[in-house]
Image (tube, rainbow, N blue to C red; front, top):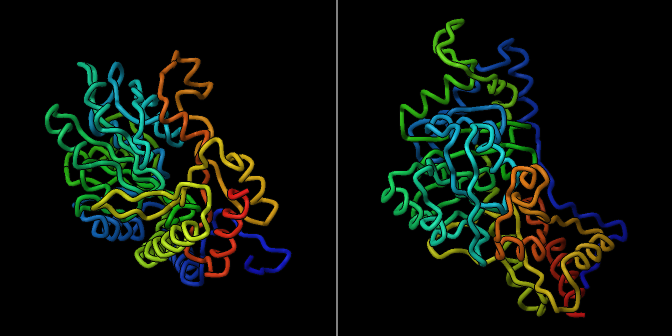
Amino acid sequence: MTLLDSRTHIPIARPFIGQEEQEAVLRVMASGQLAQGREVAAFEEEFARACGVAYAIAVANGTTALHLALLANGVGPGDEVITTSFSFIATGNAILFTGARPVFVDIEEASFNLDPELVEEAITSRTKAIMPVHLFGQPARMDRLMEISQKFNLPIIEDACQAHLAVAEGKGVGSFGTGCFSFYPTKNMTSGEGGMVTTDDPAVADKVRILRGHGMRQRYYHETLGFNYRMTDLHAAIGRVQLSRLSGWNEQRQANAAFLDRKLAELGAGVVSPPVTPGYSHVYHQYTIRVRPGGAVDRDGLKQALEGRGIGSGVYYPLPIHRQAVYQDRGYNDSLPVTERACAEVLSLPVYPGLGSQELEYIAEAVAEVTRG
């Protein structure tokens, strides 16, 4: 076993805020322009360029990005939006906020993402949009989903909140339809808090801009019911610095994941490492393994054993959206066996850029030791 200090503590995530971020915040504070100013505009331009889209609109957080993207694509009361139940609850809630109804379909066993072959079966006359989630940093099957989108003339709303700069079929996520990103502190990049909507559609971009600022196009003239979903310049300044580092950080996450893949296989660990869809890039917001039943230890036993060795881990997600109380109260009783199996088996291990080789080896050896029995 790799020897680390007896006080070893490796958290599941470790956000990095450095001197540049601090200086950027101080610069904004000194300017006196703190909200929806030049920093936000610059952040939008830089993020749009990074994603390969014409427009990026900064908002308060990832949930507001999802909400506005749905509204800007015409989703409203009585509509249905097809999505996954294996995600953070904001994915489903944003649909409910519009008055529409989430329609949950099951996921692929390997990728944890929406199963495209089940999407087409779920389309009805009320279906207004399809919302795939690029879960854990791996893009959903956008080739097949775009075929379905075009066949039925349905917009794609991409929940890319965990997949900054991931690539599918040679294109960045968030560029297939209307993209939604989160800059929560534990994401691959952060602005402290914040979100972004990306699109090539000028009408969608215009609608999002109006809705995020109380329905105004011209100051104090409100043409529609809008929201206060704006981003501050303080958050944008942090985001701009983080964005400049994001490609390098993603590459380090991928290198860390490759190390864990290799080491877990070498040590004969009794877990399933996350496969990557051919032709796609995984940016590893989470490195999520599966602990199959019938082995030396179950998922919860492994989590507890790792905690005892000073290694943080996370279960994302222990209960799918459709099984949450707020959805049970709304009559949801879907049968999603692959989703529910994943909820019982997944465990995310540390993979963030700041991990050293000794820490990565310690993690892999601990997992192997526990799961081999």
